[in-house]
Structure formats: C-alpha cells, structure tokens
Image (cartoon, rainbow, N blue to C red; front, side, top):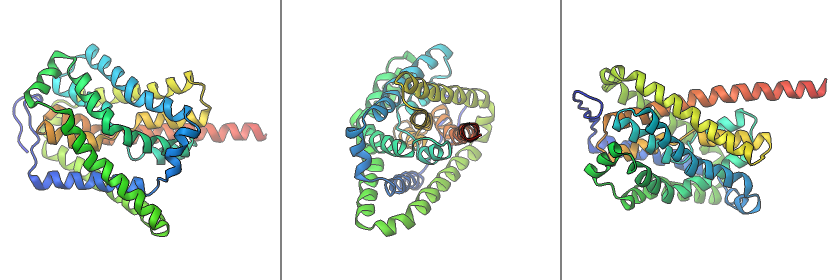
Length: 309
C-alpha cells in the first residue's frame, strides 16, 4: 500500500491478487447467506409486504438521504464524505439475520429483507452512489476524476452479489441436507476472512489511520446511529410490531461494508478516506449491532418475566 500526506491523497493500493481475494471473500459471504434463503423469503414480500417495504424504503431512500445531510452539515474530508455515501448506498450486511435472532426480532422478516435488498442493490446501489455522490461539489469532483459509470458498478455488483446469491439458492434447493451443514461454515469462514482482510488494511496503513482516527471513528459511529434511527423511526411510524421493528432497525443499521470496499478499490483506487470509512464500518457495526441485540434481548426477557409473574 502507498500513502501520501493527507487522507484525500492517500491510496491503499492492492495488486490484482488482492482484489481477486476480496471479490472471492464477498462471493463466499453471499453464497453462505444464500444457503439460508428460500423462494418463500421473496414471496413474503407479496404476501406480507408492509415490513419489507418499510425496511427497503429506509435502506435505499432514507438512509442515503440522511447520510448526505450528515456529510453536508459535518463537512468531513471529501474522501471520507464519499466513503459514507457509498456505505449508505449498499444493501444490508451479512450479519443482520444473526443479530436479529439474538435481539429477539423477526428473523423471517430479516431474511426477506436481506434477499430483496440484495436483489434491489443491483439497481439501487449504482443509482444512489451516482446521485448522492454528485450533489456535493467536493465529492462530485472525485466522481468526475474517476469517471464512475453506474453501469460498471451494476456489472460488478451483479458479479459479486447476484451470481453467488443465485448459485447459493440453487444449491440449497437441489441439496438441502448439504446446505444445512455448509451454511454456517461458509458464512462464518468468509466473515472471518473479511475481518482479517480489514485488519490487514489497517495494519499496513496504521499511521494514516491514527492521524485521522477521530474523524473515522466519530463519523462512522454517527452514521451508524443515524442508520439505526432511520430504521427504527420509519418502522415505528409504520406501526410495525416490536419484533418487526427490531428486524428493520438491525437490517438498516448493519451495512454491507465489504461491498463498499470492493467498489472503493475497483473504482476509486483505494482512496484513503473512503477505504478507512468502509473498513471501520465493517468492524464497528458488528460491535454496535451485538450491543443493541444484547439490550433488546434483556428487555424481552424482563418483559416476559413481568408478564408471567
């Protein structure tokens, strides 16, 4: 990796082998997620559309808009701002179903949102990156310099999200017993590889991270809090029941930062602020999600004790 003086000039550069590794990790994560999915998870959108539609609205419309407002008000370094916009444009993260289960939320709704948001990301992620990234003059300048084409983003997302998703669901349908045995090793193995990859990013660029840890950690915490708030707020306004509110909140608050890293390394040459934002998101949203799940699970247990006493 190579860096220069400021975070907007820094480049976290990988060779072709490193990029292939990252793409393979994302593909394995999506394949592992798809082993849990069934056609019924998509059908649930038609049969019970309220929860998924509220979640998708929060995920792809309100969160990118709220993120734009955040960076417009805070005015971080341009590369940090664009990194936040790209993270907000991505679908829900791979741990959302597990965290929803721990939080005593509606795991079925979480699975439906994961399935549908991943499919919707093929279109919505390129559109959100292109639209919101072009509104701020500072981030628009970065977009012009690299000449980002939404169709190229669509092609990358289709390759690393769409194809593994279809392959995993096909495998689960054809070989259900093998799928039941493989889904945990695939999912957790890929997640561990991704966390190791993120750790490698930080250790090789530790000096730059320490210089800007205040901006990086602070803005990721703020954006993550906004994401949870957007999900919970819209779910409450939509009068979803508590278990559904938890599922929507967690799905919106846990982003696919691995996809964000792929887009950043592919189209923006590993621009420092962007890569550090996406990498730190990959760590922080796990901590925040598990913390929220722990709080909600305790509330659930306490309420059950009160009801039975």
